[in-house]
Length: 168
Image (cartoon, rainbow, N blue to C red; front, side, top):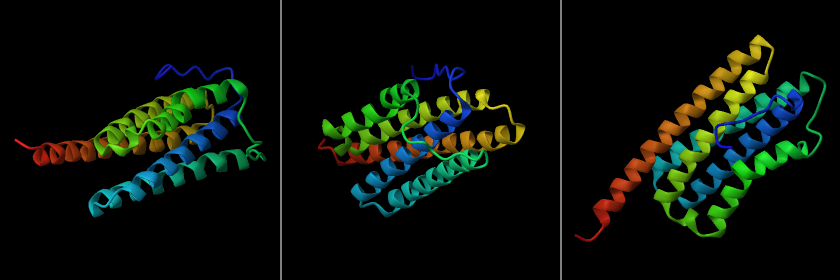
């Protein structure tokens, strides 16, 4: 599905609940990367990304609260399948296979997760009919695009470090 999100059939409340789950997953993912890093610059950058994910989650939960709703537990089966396929299973697999222990690979993986998140938020924006939500989603999308750029910079720096440490 990557990038071809079709969300029109789902209630907006379920989409906001899924978006809150995606942002929480990003927060958790960055927290795990922070715990594995010893580079102060990398840690600082990852903390910034993690903290922005917390703000995104708060926005999505506020959208639910403003409608008098709260997350009702798991999202609908169709959205859960999308969430699992696009986010949960790839992250679980990365940790289960040991791929997450290779910093260059995990940063490349993080870039791909940000790309999926951007595509999902763009599709969510199309599903929203309230103009104020468009502006906020545009801001969140821009932040996710910045996350991707920051991760690419960390990845390039890590790759350059790996090359300089390789025996000639």
